[in-house]
Image 1 (cartoon, rainbow, N blue to C red):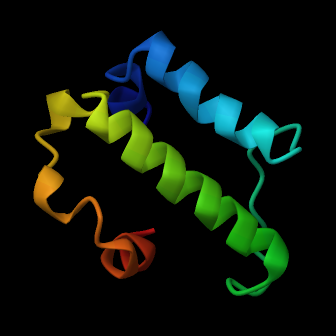
Image 2: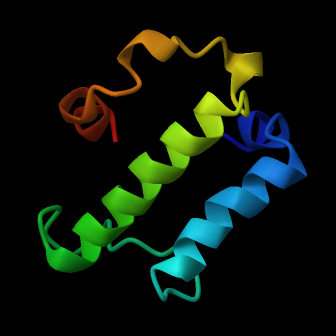
Length: 82
């Protein structure tokens, strides 16, 4: 995972964390151990992840991974993958 993160430019990482701060959160910290995946708290993190993924992908931030842009607007699919 760290190897893949290293492939994302600093500019695109800043975009992702800007989404986190725009939602009023101080850090990326979904409740993956105890909370319900459908809780408002975890749903907020899912929204941030999907929106930032779509934004960065359309700006070629994941081009090194060969992301298929065909399904980028398929939110139910992206949600399942998340």
